[in-house]
Image 1 (spheres, rainbow, N blue to C red):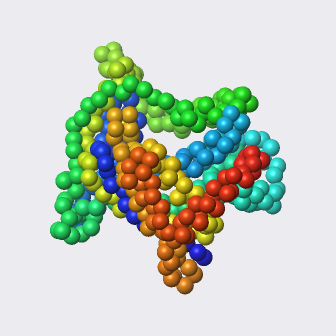
Image 2 (cartoon, rainbow, N blue to C red; image 1 turned 60 degrees about the horizontal axis):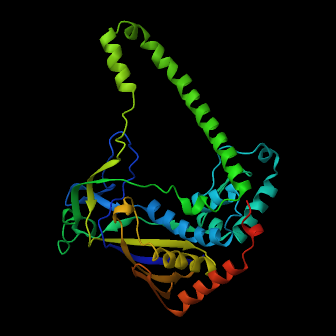
Image 3 (cartoon, helix red, strand yellow; image 1 turned 45 degrees about the vertical axis):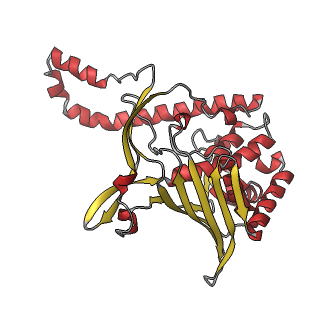
Length: 357
């Protein structure tokens, strides 16, 4: 089985925060950490999330296809390209499909849709998950604790803390949803109704399961004083975030930090290798990762050496790619250039029927 490896690193050109600000009640965020053992102690070190890198690559490949079929995409096609699809709100007709028909359809989708082949995804109408070829590694901070050597500075060298800013915009992935056709917009609305209904049913099931525990505590609840009831209601009431959206950044990675990283493609075609290269060519147009991009966080330099590992374990160089700054992308090596050309030829000949879900 042939494997292609992208081995390299990300370097921060601006502060970086990888946490997702999900807690709207506090608006306080901090960088994600990963535990590392060093000199008999556990250190919580910031890292570059594989999900962050993987979703960025997927989005950048998806943008090529979305732009080619602008204002023509159905909602299922759009959601599959950008987010990997969804099994919620699955269609009834999927229950009657034969296994052979499902496998044949999956094989056809993977052959025609390069995003499906590389990343895999969930298919609404087939009620199936399909595997992808890409394995995305953790981006490890290059520091004393991860490299195991005193020749490197400790991770604290790369940490900053306590920043505050006011968030002023939220585009909600406008560049994607603006590509929907009229039919796609209707499909989106219908599926969102199904998702909400599925979520409601799950919540009801959880409530039923928890009823037993609540019944056991019923007597003590009846004895609660009015003051106690008021406090309990206050606890249940969600806190409302400031209308000004003031975010408190508890900690972040400073400019000049380096994360080592590796991508692995299992048995890829040449055009699939080219698709990853193209994703970083597009990344150079807006080379930012993580959150708080609207205040300049997350700007990155990227470089990868690309090589193939054959069935005997021999390594063969394919080329090198580098994102130096905004719209500064470089590619070296005949193999890498050929792979990129193969992908662009695929994109040129791509039809809408080939990506239809």
